[in-house]
Length: 74
Image (cartoon, rainbow, N blue to C red; front, side, top):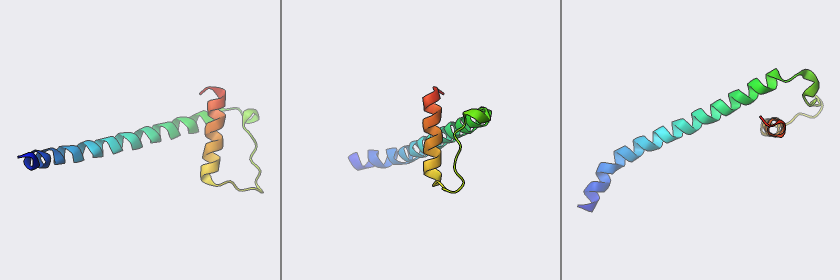
């Protein structure tokens, strides 16, 4: 009897997991979109210059942008 209940709940749990994953990915997209919009609206004088000689990894660049936005209180 217990196994039957687990099988009945399983499809619902799978759907909930898919919905949760979609919500998380949507939330991350919204955060990135907000940060990019915030960066675009910043005046050129407040942006930190990034040296062209030293290429940053995308994760490092994203981290620097996020730190800068948090520092400003975005």
